View 1 (cartoon, one colour):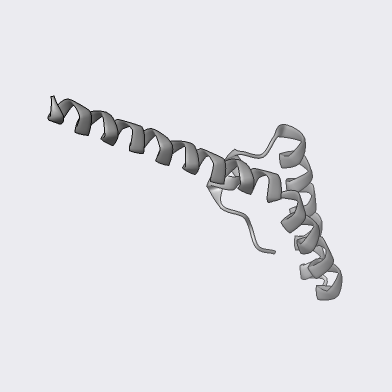
View 2: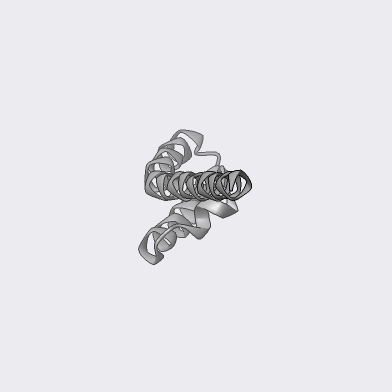
Length: 81
């Protein structure tokens, strides 16, 4: 089973995280039993589950980029005066 990044896991809601952990446990068990076709299905569910957290991470990055741009613009304005 492929884990998502720590950053994405940190942005999962409590319900999403609980479901993620349960699915990872099931998927790992299936892999141990060499039931790779079923583990693949579980991995797909995990991939869908983490999509909202990935979007939250992207939004945080965009917000940080906007804040940086505003800061650099304010420095430029201060320099012009």
